[in-house]
Amino acid sequence: MSKSEEIIVIKFGSGILTHPDGISLDDSQFDGLVNAVSNIHKTGMRPVIVSSGAAAAGMMAFGIKERPADLSALQACCAVGQTRLMHFYETLFRQYDLNVAQLLLTSEDFSTPSRTLNVTNTFDELLKHENVIPIINENDSVATEELKFGDNDSLSASLSILINASLLIILTEVDGLMDAHGNLIPQIDDINDAMNHVRLKKGKYSVGGMATKLEAASMASRSGITTLIANGRRTNQLEDLVNGEGLFTKISIGNEQRN
Image (tube, rainbow, N blue to C red; front, side):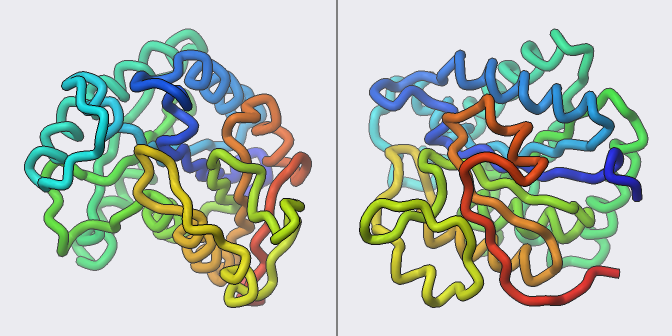
């Protein structure tokens, strides 16, 4: 596969899709992220988005300000929110003559051979169409606790491995992993050491924190996939990240070579 055909998986966290001080989706963020993804697509690379935000969008629709603890209530939020989320993406990508394809997955899609094959075949077919941007989310509206990934960081890593991505970019609300003095750690070679720098804090609508991002990045990196954690609020640097430039923490764990 030539560089222009490489698959780039980009994970959008809820924190970068919603207003920091309000309960609504952030239009300017969607505009910036979609524009950046469209520009990456123009280079011939094949961007695949793993997008959080369904629960937050549904909570906004219902006027709920705190993430429901009850599973059924949360799933109802996800069911309503997923349609709102995809409407945003469909409307914005249409401006660039791009179509969106929605895939909702659970952990069972990666652990059951027949279902894994179906997912792989679907991606193979979708990526034959140059004007399609696949958008992936966990199937939160129906998944039971036993079938859930629990966070889209893990989903993005598992998906990257399955579809043989060359790069995984996990976008969050900070520039990457910070040390005790607030300085960006540009590269991680030891996951256990990196965990010592994790602060137990996550966003209002978030499920995973920095620890889950590091674990997901470690999993992808061990499979030979270059993995970056970067600030999704800096939408103008997304194209730079694809080229290894900008502000980020790179996870380089393991030396396994992909076939």
